[in-house]
Amino acid sequence: MPLVENRAGTTTSSVEASTYVEAYRIMLQGRYFEDKLGALYRAGKVVGGVYLGRGQEAFSVSLAIQLHRERGDVYAPLIRDQSGRAAFGEPMIDAARTYLGSVLGPMKGRDGNIHRGRPDLGQPAMISHLGSSLSVINGMLMAKRFRGETGVVGGATAGDGATSTGAFHEGLNQAAVEKLPIVVAVADNQFAYSTPTSRQYACDSLVDRAAGYGVTGYSINGTDLSECLETFQKAVAAAREGGGPQLVVGKLLRLSGHGEHDDASYVPDEVKADRYGKDCIQVARTRGLAEAFFSESELEVMESETLEMVEESFSRAQSENAPDPAKDDWCALSTRSLMEGTH
Image 1: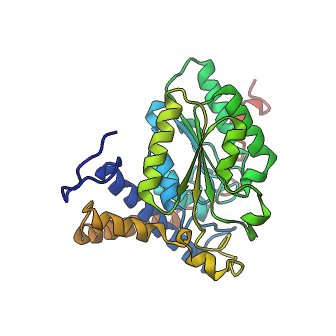
Image 2 (image 1 turned 90 degrees about the horizontal axis):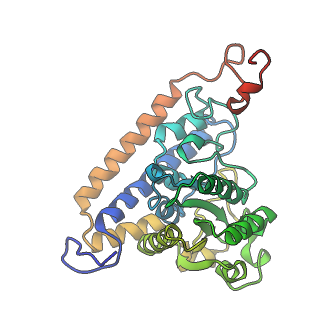
Image 3 (image 1 turned 60 degrees about the horizontal axis):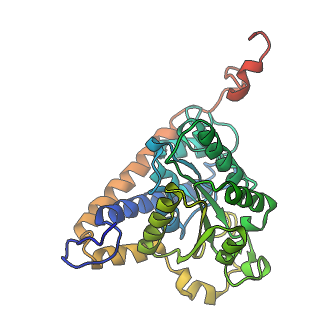
């Protein structure tokens, strides 16, 4: 994509202004949604754990916004990918309903509050054994290959801790051998729960592993929206054009605990003060204003409209019924044909 002119009349990067603004809007939506979610958790309104993606919005949105559900692309997000889910087309009400246990949600009020998905729309439900989603996306891409579908891309996400699992190794190795069109986004947020990366891997960067698998690797600043968008744009295009797996490692910091139950007291102050400890939303806001992608008044409207959307989604989900064990059909949808009396 050629360089474009922004509204200030100066040339900036290969990211179009409209893409930058849309990505920022989705990041803001993810942050506001999770702020509200955290408040509801502390008020005892959410059953189960809450794990926020604060600080990872730029990295998360930048992969998913490059994927196209209508073209057959598939995407496997994790617990900190609220922004990525929204960019791939997940309605906010789906997320609110899942966390609040509404029977109208995609998981019908069952299976925890983070395992939501729409497999029929290219988004498999999240697997708690992080790293396993690579194999799921591999399978979906292989199925498309067997059906003769071309030009599709799969996106899978993982954290630095997940890269230490056997499932991640097997999935990436298979993708490399089969030359699958997959983009693997690794959010290196410096801690696997409370375990620092110094106790997870000995290489200088996780991107060093790309060469060992025979895949293309990129290492980026995961707090910089422009850099994230440019890199994922390049990676998705390469995968779609037959370049095989692309591994993108984003350096950043989780700006909250592992979950809302965790105060992250193990994170040293010097890590928080490092350049990767910056809030990606503030970084994107400052850059967007400097480049005249949006104005202060436009931001005020965006923030107001986004906050209203978040409040409406949670209010609607809270008013809906939970599952009724005496009346609801609890059959797993994928095994309905195995029920007695159906043959």
